[in-house]
Image (spheres, rainbow, N blue to C red):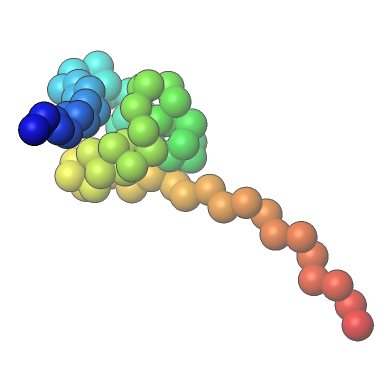
Length: 72
C-alpha cells in the first residue's frame, strides 16, 4: 500500500524592515495612501499598515469613490 505524502505549502517570503524602509514609511505617512506606500516599499498593504501601527505612525486610507445614488 502506497503512502500519500501531502505537499508542503511554501511559506511566504519574509523580509526584515531596514532603516531605510522605516524612514520612507514615516516620510510618506499622512501624505500618501497606504497602498502607494506599500508599492514603494515592495510590500503588501497589510504589512505596511501593521508596521505603521507598531511604530505609532498614522497612514491614510483610500476608499474607492462610490457612484452617486440614483434619484427616484
